[in-house]
Amino acid sequence: MFHGHESLANSTRDEWDIKWETDTIYYHFESDCEDILGFDNELKAFRLAALAWTLECNLNIRQKRRNTADAEIKIRWSDSIHDELFKKRPNVLAYAYYPSPGREIAGDITFNDSHLWSLDGANVPAHYADPNHYDVDSPVMMRTFDIQHTTTHELGHALGLKHSNNACPDCVMYLMYNGNRNLRANDRERIQKFYEKASTSEKIKKMLIGRIKGGVT
Ligand SMILES: [Zn+2]
Image 1 (cartoon, rainbow, N blue to C red):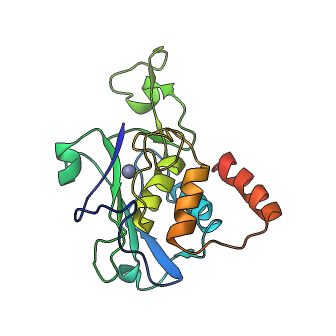
Image 2: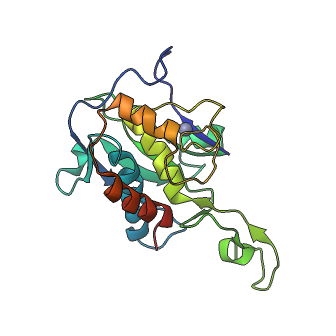
């Protein structure tokens, strides 16, 4: 499965040319996922995704509680009928816009709600996903996608990272979905180079990396 994003211009550099210029960037959820009840779990997954990046670089990512229209990163869920990109490329899981201070859509993330999402990326009985077509005792299983991995990947784009090269299929920023929640060395080096490296102690980092791996429980 692909993660898609808009390329705003041709760029020969490894990363997007523009980064956020402020230390704190804000996010706001405009809508949530149909497959997961309430906003809470999407929010928790987003916080863990943000933590994965902010552990490595000097950047704060906070929820915008007032004047939400001013949030740099707006998150929404749309299906293949209502989103132009998903309409043309239904296998795209989500897409994000690169940073561009002052540009309304920059940083925004859209998830494809026509796919099946979950908090653990595990297969689920088909009845759970499609009760109209599958009996409760049907043995058919359906694939779901880990919302936290995909959020971490898209957030990487929203911060300015492009896809990692083919040498790192385990990287969170790899082109194809791999479900990994924790950044790999290549992801870490890239965000540390793009924004200034954070001075988080190794002990705290180790503990928080464990929490990120554990996901939303
Ligand atoms: Zn991507």
